[in-house]
Length: 451
Image 1 (cartoon, rainbow, N blue to C red):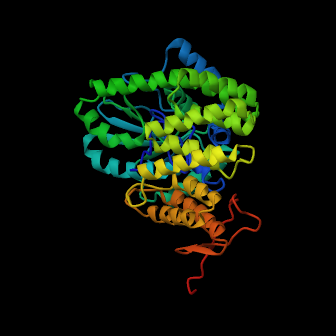
Image 2: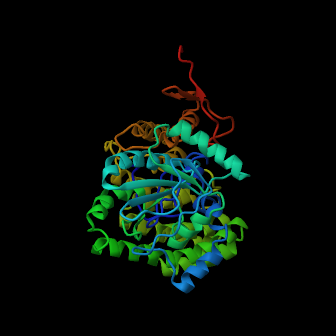
């Protein structure tokens, strides 16, 4: 299964798939296209969750909150609403006595491929136990339904030729609203399990199915304190955060930084331990509004808390505010910037040391490498990028597409750091003219196999 990184983040991603409660957002698919490691979280918010939240979120959210209609554990399963079945026989309703896994996904979602592949194995393993998997493509990006349908069909043929379960297509997003919006599920892939009596037994990440599904089949999951607590936490998190997102998204898309700051400060007051809003708070003040008087104390506290928590995710979020080359950091006090960068780098490398080969490096090491590069320690920066490249082929499973994209960016970064042509396997890149600290994404060329 795809590694969970630290499953506490919705907005923050550093070439990594992270999540809030049940959601497993697909920000890596968008962020991997950004320079070096990613752009700062606010732009990630506008790009990555804008499409998901701006599509009539506020109104259905208000209805859900006011009527207490949130989809949760023990709720009757909503109906199946799809326009076409791209794979498998049509299914109009859930049959009593069977257990259904309903998986929401899209072709542009990098971690969805790994999740869908895992479900092939899960379907095979539990078919005789009455389990049926339904893949629901409800967020495909295309100008027309026919274009989306053609794209889906081609993608399934190429990526999942041995698919053994149904796949439905919902261009109208009706099923998405009934299931995803009603359950406060923002990102994909997200899994729902419908139990034998037609009621919801699970809402969450597909990564959790290996643990939850056997318990659902024995009837022990829904009555367990673990399931009830997890669902209560998911609902409470959604009730707190979704109204914030509904206000935050339009402000971010409009680049109304004052409005966005007001929303984020409200969020930080309610959720002081949410890394997403804490990082976004610092970014808005330092990089969007250039308010150093207010921003530096916020940044200092973020660094202290990140180190205190010994959280790689928190520390990388703080590090990006200081050393993301996509930002102009020239207005920051440089001595303090480098002092904080040094402290964060040491703690990141302590939490995830280079010799610990099984831990993924690509979510944090590029930020640390950028610190060393700007500090003048070019050899250390190059070493960390090379370690990161090698770690992509470690024991942690990474979807092939994401691995290719990350490798491409890292090889280009390596070439810029070395100021000469760099190769890794069959990928090569040359330094970009005029680029010293900022790497702006030239696609590496394929090395001549005979060379």
